[in-house]
Amino acid sequence: MVSGNVTAVLNSALRYKEFTACLREWFNLTEGRLTELWNAAENSWGALSAAALYAKAFLPLKMCAENISINDRDWRRVKRDVLGLKEIILKDIIIKSRYTRTRRNLVKAKLRDLEKGLASAGYIPFSLHFRLDSRAMVGEPPPPFKALFEGGTLIDPIIEVPYIPGSSLKGLLRMVYNKIGEKLPGCLGELGEPALFGSLEKGIGAMVLTDAYPDPDTAVEFLLDGDATVPMYADGTSTPRIEEHRANSVPSKYPVVRRGVGFVEILGIKRGLEDICGDELHALMRGFFELSTLLGVGRKTSLGYGKVVVIG
Image (cartoon, rainbow, N blue to C red; front, side):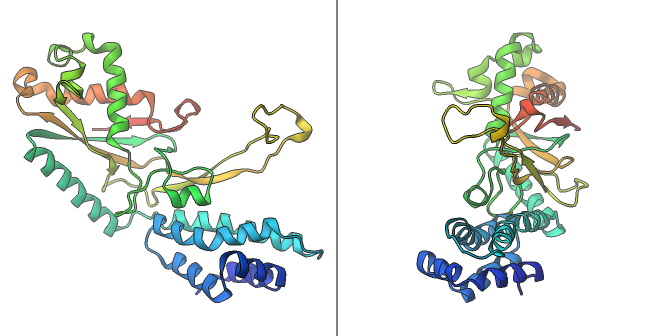
């Protein structure tokens, strides 16, 4: 059953024959099909699956509201309410990111599988735990998020939780190693970047990283949060001019990873490296990882996003 606020907005908009004609002729979308899509989105299990269904329902509504002209004094309010459905969608997507017991158990199983995979490939798996000390946007948003919002973050399509690609974390480690590698303890500094991280000549390196998933023991209730940016100056040209009278302060809202979410990264070290580094290998790798994550993870780190605290 479509929620009351949404039903009221749709009923107001569908009173206009120009609007219903637009939906039918441009998108082959009837009132019944529209309600069906919205119900399916509201009843879906995860944020990503909900976004995919909401996009099919909301984007036609948005395009018709923005592209038809109706000579009615109430139409402006109705149009505003239709476009405002996007905020309702964002709130529902955040609610659907609740870190339930079922999702936590799925992540536990995923992490166990990653550890087993590393062990079978000849690596010693280490669990590194860290927490986001600010909101984060990681990677290119999935298509449903890109269709609805001006930003977003990566979501695992199966478990429907945000994750941080191992390639992003490995890039941070490689960046730091290039700067201070020779100053690291002998077991790491003497290996050299190609041997440690891998290369075309050396093949897979002595260190591999899996994707990082939300810690099943993290204390947060929701994994996603809403964020917004306010584009102040834009004139539709490639070289916009800064003119106060042309400022456009309409905020762009989108889902991000919530501050305080804990993550688990499984780091694999090639068997035999412990013979070089000894019993301090885990402490060395944790320190190296902590140093690397000072740069932040994801996008917009220069603006304070993606701050990380390594906790174990």
